[in-house]
Length: 80
Image (spheres, one colour):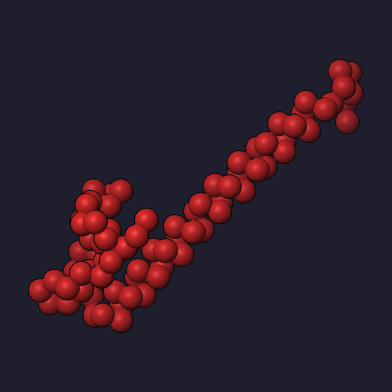
């Protein structure tokens, strides 16, 4: 998801680059205006969090797939 730092009265806020509301329904990630430096850090954290959750989802899917395939290879009557 591309994010952008917007200049607002009193400072800066981070939001989606297309200006649409974010998944939480709000236009910006913060309620109060931030300094430019804090807005940059917030945007980096949002990208990092997004990357972390997508890799976490891939790992969970991979583990589920591995578990399912190992269950299929078990023979009937095999208790190991």
